[in-house]
Length: 124
Image 1: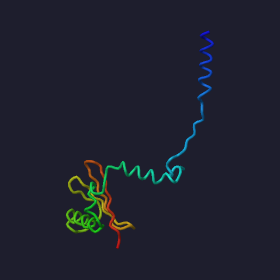
Image 2: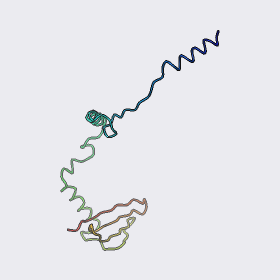
Image 3: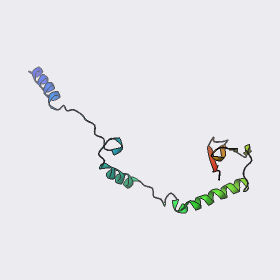
Image 4: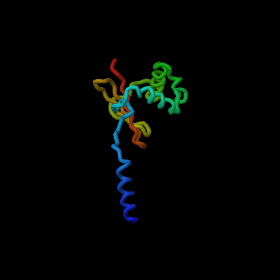
């Protein structure tokens, strides 16, 4: 008797609740409904803990402020003069300066950390 109940239980349990799984994308970038775009954008903005004021962007309302900052740093580092072409070293920083079709290229390498920065001063 127990065997019959067990067989019935196992056979009915696997037959009655099976269904086919289908994938439907939510994001319109991956083939989802284009009307989800607004909902996804609003949801992302609501979860964003940052604001422009927190990032200090108000100091750079226009590009002139950023341009002045770069010029001041360049003048402090090189004394207002264009650095000499070739490779030179100043403390932990190694500079490689050369001309290219894009303009004057300055590669800066921090020898201690391996961090690299490239500055391109356009021709003009």
